[in-house]
Length: 119
Length: 275
Image (tube, rainbow over all chains, first blue to last red; front, side, top):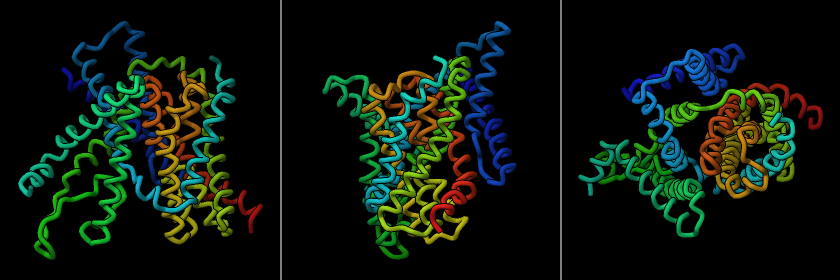
């Protein structure tokens, strides 16, 4: 059933974000540190386990996962409508200059750092 | 109109589907018209950001008029109000956008993109990803401090707050709170973080080819350098959806590292230069 797919992702999210909150508490921040990342790792480990043991998910369960995946762009579009673009543009030059430089300069470093990856 | 507003507020999430569907449709059509079909998501996101700006303009007017109590979430804050004084009825007609585009659905959808990710790709760029996290936070902090200095800020705590905000809009307020920095500077630091986030969404797809943002490794480095979850999620959605999980996985650690290092290590380092 499709809901199983959603349930698997949700369970990964809860487990990962719980770990993230534990890490955050251990670091004295009281917030989630890397929860989404941990959740993704757990989700990937489940896939690796399935592959190694030669099992596959039910087609409909997989469909549930793909449904959430397909919602990614719409969610990002809605997220963009939520951004405080007005304040960002209306708060003067300091945020504008600093924010834009902090995009352009790091992006220019990507080709350099890419050499470190073992592609 | 009031009947419609009442319905739209009641069916918030479903209303959000309509608005997002229409925006996405127009975005993809625009991309098709100019012969850049691949840029459909980028156009949809750009349109959404314009809607957020227009919404923010209206919301700030409603805030000044005392109709709403906060205006920091683009179109979501806008209400349809009828009557006046105590009799006033307010309908959050765009409330659903706040649910569909909020942190919960964003993170849920990001995690789902890890379906089909090859762990080998993650390991390959693991070191580059970690390194880019450190470079990303330090570089953003330095840029924030230098721009702050250029615009006449001299107090180290204020400069660190602006630097933190340039990292992400969460780190700025955390740093500001640690040193009791005045709220105008904290607001400035949040704005800087939003500019970075939105800037990444618009600029990255435009120069993706030039900076070779085309592989899982590059996406991981990108996530580490930009760091804002929204910025990374939006930018990679517009560049190539397949790269999303790689960038997001690294970016998820950025704000935590920033909150950890900025008020402590970065601030101490800054005090060596500015007293």
